[in-house]
Length: 319
Ligand code: SF4
Ligand SMILES: [Zn+2]
Ligand SMILES: [Zn+2]
Image (spheres, protein in one colour):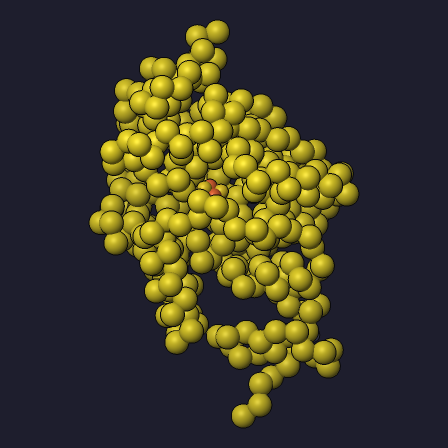
């Protein structure tokens, strides 16, 4: 039986699940509709939100910037600021930053760059170099992820944003769910939420409008729209568990294309039964930097102190 086509335009891609063939126009419209539906389904945005978008210049955040920019035209009271986090990875981040500058200028989107060096007093390169000599040190991506979350939250506060948008896609989401399942970490498994959640004033709610868009779809969208993005691999990219899960899932998707959606939809259904557990995290605040933390001293202040770095977060709290 031959595949069904969306229209008479030249074919661009074929959906693995439905086997339907799409032209560029219908494919890109389909992705935009899905993002709009995701935003509505999880009540991600209000009409007057100031969205702070984590924009690295990679494919995912570039496509999200483009789609949110297009969506924003329908919401004249919405604002958007793109935030680029400069982790301080020599020879990797510099070129991306130039690209983020030119793209935001093109679309006239306010753009801020925040650096690990300024916020934490050290670049990721310096932190990783020292942490390698420590026993039980975290992986580069675990350290980077923790610092990036704090840096984005910091930047979002600076511009008075009401939401932080990140470009995590369906592949990332399914990987995170399975990683916590494999680790047996019920607390983190439950805490993954697609609904914006403001537990403490200090945390700005996060939204992930791409949680139902796959990584290959994002690449196809970027190419269909001729969007410029950087695709150099980060020299530290190697989280062992995430890579194992990624390989496992890509194998599964080849045999069963609905796998990623099934994982996320099942997680949606399961987490409905755990609302009390997910909101039980105690409201402690780090005695050094003042951020919400489940420890007396937050993991970032602990890390900076253990590596002997001066902690600008601490002096900021005192001043
Ligand atoms: S790959 Fe890891 S170290 Fe590199 S930017 Fe991403 S999270 Fe940070
Ligand atoms: Zn078509
Ligand atoms: Zn702290």
